[in-house]
Structure formats: structure tokens, C-alpha cells
Image (cartoon, rainbow, N blue to C red; front, top):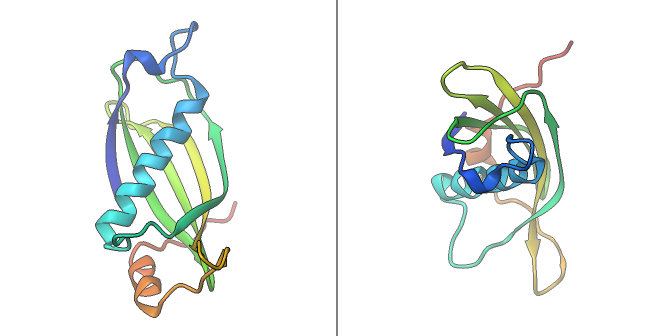
Length: 134
């Protein structure tokens, strides 16, 4: 499990006073980039693209709250992996949003997906959790 904290800034809220839904995707992106960096999967060239993303909004979040984003891998393929990102309000521990992403290693010169190395798969496997049924 990979974790980061995000402090909600005033500019991330909307006229209703809660975090605008677009910002959850920014939080997820920040978390993904830190995840890649912490695993050492990013060198001089960025070689990952986001193929799919979604977010379920469960509770409202407001200015000055702190979120904890917990990321884990749920599936590893040949050139891609699925990342689940659960967002919790730090003080209450409430689950406020659930995000899912599919990330593909990409060869920008050839303009096609590129197989993950065995080393990358091992690093991803260390953050893998099985999806709970039900």
C-alpha cells in the first residue's frame, strides 16, 4: 500500500463550498506520480500513459481538510496495470472517494504499448492487493 496526504486548498472548492469533482483526479494524478517515483519506475523519460480513469464520490470534502490517498495495484498485465486509489478524510477516517486507473507503459517513438519489465512487475507486485468481492 502506498500512501500520501493531500491538504485541500480553498481554490479547489466550488460555489457549494466542497471540493470540485475535477480535483479528485488531480489528487489521484499526484498520488500516481509519487507512487511511480517511490517505486523507482521513472527514469529520465516518462513512459507511462493513463488509459482509463474513474472516480466514485462518496462524501463531500471541504477546504482545509486533509485527505489520505491509499494506492494499491489490483491487476498486472503484460504492458499495463490497474491501480485503485481510496481517499480517506484524515481526521474521521471516512472513505470519501474511490478511484481506479489503468496505466500503460508506452513507447512514444513506436507509438505503441511496451511490455513491463520483470523488475517493474516485481515492484508493482509488492503493492498488489486482491479485490474484495461483495
